[in-house]
Length: 180
Image (cartoon, rainbow, N blue to C red; front, side):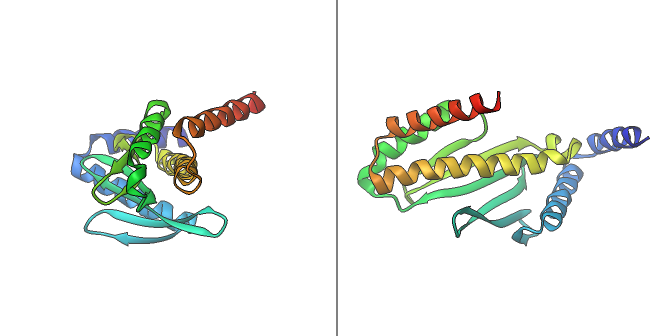
């Protein structure tokens, strides 16, 4: 009976206008934040939620989630005010990530000197399967932590981008072998 109810609810949600779909997903996003008891602020007119997560020991950072243009977006600014002389290495590391990431993109803003990890998903995914919104947020969070750690190594330790990527790939290979 529950399966039938879920199926009918999905059909109903898919049949709505794009504006109504956005409203439903926006409501689901707010409910998820309340249920998870995450520290967050809601900006109704912009359909934007700013959430604070612990990234590393005691380091709390702001993540942004919003509904726009029939899409669900996740954003996190992971490196701010990087030294200008590191700009070529920042681009190199970002392009390495963009070549290997399955989820999202690493964007470099040279005017304001920051690096950001973004994920975008068609609104139909969280509209039809609300648990996917939580999954996307957690995927974005976990990838952002790894990317931020890599950029910290670049900026603070002046490590070469190729070595950082090689270390990360070795770590992922090790993790995947342990789960097999």
